[in-house]
Length: 101
Image 1 (cartoon, one colour):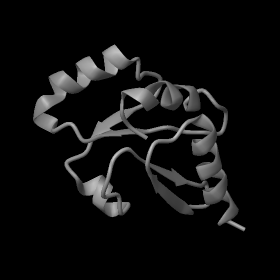
Image 2 (tube, rainbow, N blue to C red):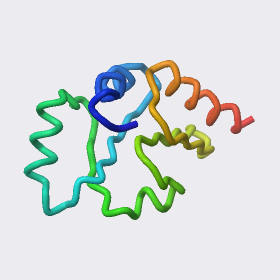
Image 3 (cartoon, rainbow, N blue to C red):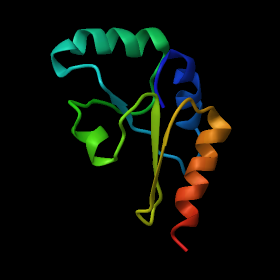
Image 4 (cartoon, rainbow, N blue to C red):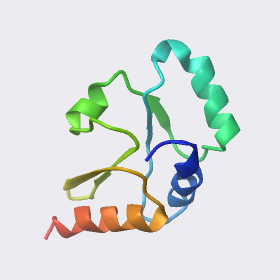
């Protein structure tokens, strides 16, 4: 999940027990000043945010934005490209977990 519209949903997700959020930004590493300003302005706190030069997105087969990847404790993975709210993200997590059985 990305973009200003979804930042509050990402922050809310990060407070749900059993859910771990890692933000992946496509802001270039040489623009960390801009990334830091964006995180502060949008209130994206409470979980790690990492800069991606494209490697993470390619590894997970993400070719658009906004995007989300859910990985279950058992290692099952599902991706979604498009805007998600909290319930959509929880459904994505449930889909990943259901693949563990």
